[in-house]
Image 1 (cartoon, rainbow, N blue to C red):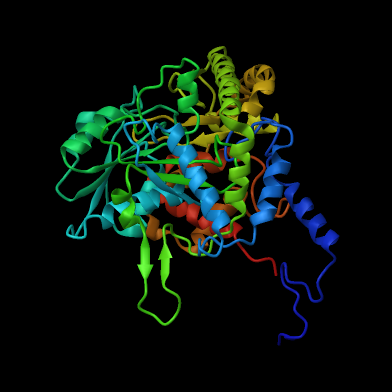
Image 2: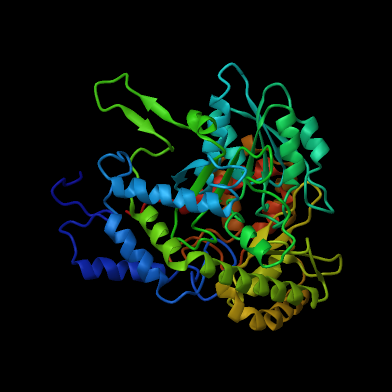
Amino acid sequence: MIDENRVEAGALSATGVPAEVALAEVRQLRGADRPTHGGRLFAYVYDPAVPGLDELAAAAHRESAHVNGLDPTAFPSLLAMENALVAAAGRVLGAGPGSTAPDVVGSVTSGGTESLILAVKTARDAHPEIAEPRIVVPSSAHAAFAKAAHYLRVALDVVPVSPQTLRPDPAAMAAAIRPETVLVACSAPSYAHGVIDPVAQIAAAAADAGVRCHVDACFGGWTLPYLRRLGEPVPPFDFAVPGVTSISVDLHKYAYAPKGVSVLLHRDATLRAPQYFAYADWPGYTMINPVIASTRSGGPIAAAYATVRHLGDDGYLRLAGVTRDAVAGLADAVRAVDGLRLMAEPESTVVCFTATEDGPDLFVLVDELTARGWHTQPQLSYAGLPASVHLTVTAAVAPRVAEFGPDLAEAVAAAQAAGPVALPPELTALATSLTPDALTPELVAGLAAGLGMGGETDGAPLPERMAVVNTLLDAAPPALRERLLVEFVGLLQRPTW
């Protein structure tokens, strides 16, 4: 029987602990994380290596952490900061007074996924007469579009990308548009490979069909304009392109704000109108939300506002230049190693490479890089595209570029010496023949144990090296990959009683 007067479970202690003890526990837990600073983590975090910026953002966050974005009339400070961030994003992306898109409006969201869900929701709700709405995306589009389609019950029409260019054919995108299509999307750039889709042609095709066109610039929207100003040949992708009706850009990426802050922009207020949700048919307050969340902490918005104000246009131009040079250095390091090749010549802030036919096992290589302190992102093979390694490059990487080349060569040599991962035959058979519906808890537990996910290591049941796990996932078709990952992550997300 549980003694209700004596609770002790997870974070809930029986009597409470001193503040310094709770903070020490957080710091101890953080010790198991990947390093968020120092230029050795090539995914998930964005570090400009600007002294004092973390402290500024934390102070601004603290000032507004308890401000609630639910009611802008109660907290006008948050409304003012949000409008200022929307204006800044619009200006960076070719909008505002004197431009061809002077009436751009927008909203601050919690991240790129929310921005994309809202872009799809807005396009869907603009056409209530369409019973079964559809959206058209390239296969390289961010998975958040698939998430939006799933959540919103919108059909997803996926257009393959060229194995050579990693971009969709504009004619194929145009051909995929149907009478039920409410949105066509493209990327600037695609996250996986860092290449910019042919936005102008795709937007023109959408406009000819009377369909909205969203540009997912969550990843590159804050850097591509600055790279263009530095002389890089960035193709048109923003509101200067006719037919582009909305753009998303994440401020917690290359605007270097803390997570999570994104901006969703629409060419005008009429296009944005279906984004809102309002409800008055209940006895409580009338709900009116521009985004998915109702209650929103002002902390992230204030932190983003302070960050953008502090760095300024000249600061972002400088950081873009530093990042561009780091990208060039990393790409040179890849070119210098036998057995590797670039998936595409870098044109944004991504370096993506794969192995040649006689090259190393990429998943073993990723583990070897991790062992040397470099945390990269492995990407599984897909529809004729080989497995690859993704590097998100930030300004903090620049001082580390000279170290990366020798470590990469050494890691490749070690991976070649180790040889490719050899899955046990029974695992290979399961990966190639099993259907998602056939997975049972017992089978999942057996797979996890066979992959080294059964024991506790620093509080998380993960193997020290992930090559075997990635090899199994790579051998499985996408539907089975999804189910396996759901099950494996479910094993990790357990309460600590």
